[in-house]
Length: 122
Length: 414
Image 1 (tube, one colour):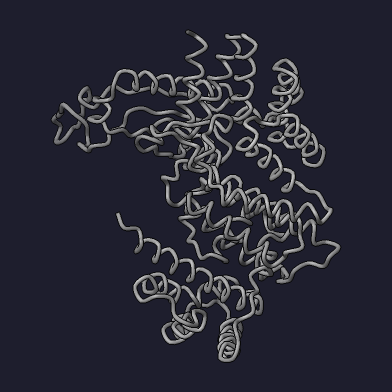
Image 2 (cartoon, one colour):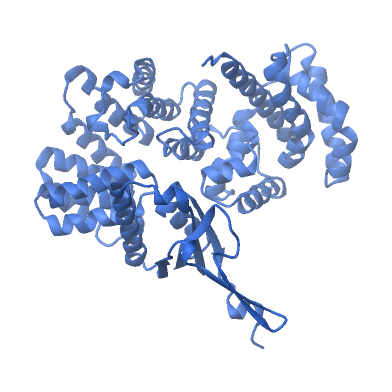
């Protein structure tokens, strides 16, 4: 099954992390990504720029609204994601727990809703 | 900070769990309806957890729980329980238990309940959770977090296991001598699984998991006291106490990971070490060696450093050889390879690791990569060591251990 690991982080806190700790964190992510790839679990994944770089778009009454900033202005923002292939949710939780973000912020795990699941072929 | 209220609260909670487990075991042993027994006591148990820390533990805690359960819940429980017969049965049994308790203590049936929970017909992965829930009254969400499983999934597994006990007619009894060994193994394994989940939170910051190590020891004590002539039961308790004794030494002041060989042994809990040594010695006189005694003996050899000033790797290696021949898991093989490296050098250690070959399970097994990285580093094979450290770092979920491995890796490049 495919799962999306969504990494939520407190951006304000991250901005204040000393450079050495930030480098260590990046290295930990590098190692985590490698471990995912080596085990054949990794499908995709990337880091996102902070939410100040976000642009939200919405069309209402035929008018396009373009807004600076994220859809939900919360303290914890989506900071990155992984897409993984795991046999079941237990395996996926195991990988989510290894994500460096699990010990600093929150990691959310959602199964992909595969096309076949909601539009079964006849 | 005054910790006395905290201690009183913990003592009251322990007493509540003790009585609760006894009652669940007593009721379930007669009906085979574990869920029904838990259901009947749920509210009374919650009331005890809330009230006893303030009022103190009542003189007859089990009688208190039963009385509250009957007064408050009889009707509600009647409505909730699934089968008519089960309901009435449970009521009769509660009356029987109450009548008994007027003149004597309730017999302790928890060992029988544990054997039912760790029965071969119950899926191995749910045995430890089941014991934690039925004997100690932990809720599914707490158990789920400790075992890295979603609370809904854990809840469903527990419900399924309980109906399996009833429907397949799993007996509530301590097995006969002939099959006791194997069946006891399953019970001990479940207890050790609970302890190990708690142990993997070395900082002890996550109270849920820390509790689990304490509860594992508590269950180990219970089994050792109920089966005092079973060397493996004593061996497991000894093993857990050795490990627990070192808890404080596993992190330095800055919260960084300290490997066993570098731990300051003044920080070890010497009373616990002595108790562990005593248990291991007693087990050894019974003349039946087993996995837990051997693992406890490894621990004993490690802590002997506090007296001799050095680690006796030859003894540790011999113990791992013995363990490898009776329980050749990858975990044992890795530890054996490390011991070989300490006695014969890194090349021999690495060779012992390579024997594991391409066991697929090792792909995401952190200790394998950490051991391999350490040995390659000692041989000066920096590129391969770096790669192995990367794998180990990527697979670690404890930030302190991750930092430790990153430092080792960084030292290779300098």
